[in-house]
Image 1 (cartoon, rainbow, N blue to C red):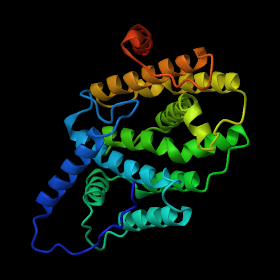
Image 2: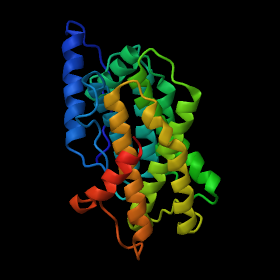
Image 3: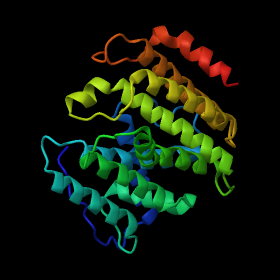
Length: 276
């Protein structure tokens, strides 16, 4: 992508509600225009959460696009763009002409979410720009604590609303999010290697074994959500992640990028119902 500067200006005289509606509609279009392994907000997600998930996804998508263009944009320019994104997110003393920022600010305000969770995501993208290959398994877990775990916490806090999220639930969520991130590293191994990135410093068989254990530790989060629909969504996400991990374990070459298809429905269903 071409890095764009965020425009900051006053918009006095404009209906704030109509601006936010347009901002959320923009984020929904962003979400629908990008392929992801798992749906950003499937039909299972309650309507009250949907626009907020789209806003948070659009923020992550923007930051990811900035960080992931080493061939066309200098390292310094990408870091500057991430810094600009952070300032736009945190400086709520001025209005932004950027629809994504408008939507994210509204979500943080209306849902009582902590800005620090998004700042942790930005730290992961800065680490991608200043990439240093992990040398230990602990390095991998630390990276995931920035790149993946905040996403799960945001999802749970949207589900819980004003209710507190139990510490045990957050620990289980972190385990699942870390497992999903590592599963993605395994799936994209050939792509990352071609870009000169290697996120997995230990033998692949060990990675798979440790990731299976993370899924096991994190499964209780699927029953901890307030909404039944969210519980079903979490079961579907975990089942998909575990199924993908098994495809990665079965492949005979790291040049192959596994992908789930209709023929894997029995595998997905078995894992989904196991979580009931």
